[in-house]
Length: 271
Image (cartoon, rainbow, N blue to C red; front, side, top):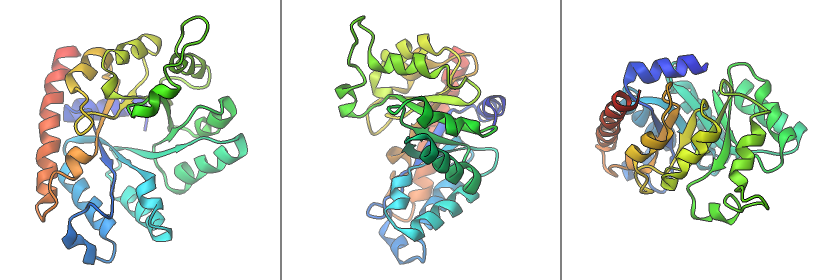
């Protein structure tokens, strides 16, 4: 999917919502566990109920990997179920030496046909560029994450007072561009989103941390939105686990709709 196609979907749906498919077998409604493939049934219902409001889906690969070989089959079926005009993110956080990264890229892009994959930049250029060799596919590079341990490294400053995450942003711009690279920027960082936007004015951000983690959607838009929106705001638990009962799909739809309405207002305000 191209950047223009993604923005077109945002405009069409008045939404920049990414639904995170963190499909935990221990948390899905109990009545699904008698199904032959309970995770697929769960994700199918979530997708069908929220596709009107979502412009992206982000399966968290760990929840599928943990199920062994069947989990990989389920992941493939879930990805194939997502409508083709909706952006797909393999949240795999890969990143290894070049020949290994090339195989990771082939797995997620050639074999599974995801639009994008999350990648850790710590090992440098040769661990990232193999993912950028695929046409109309995206790298989503970890930059400033929302977890508590992110401060262990990401905010460390060099002798010039520049935090490490900013060096990642600056260096990585020579690897890709705003047509094939996005950045993960956590919603819980508030005004720091604005600092990231100054360094990469044209790139899309994948923004976790809104909802269950306490991030403010209005702050994300205030500090991070650009002329092509430039945001995919992810909500996982707040949508997919809105109910643990048989009405889980309907409740997920209601929560997705709430976010879409707020996003519509923010798009009108800032674009």
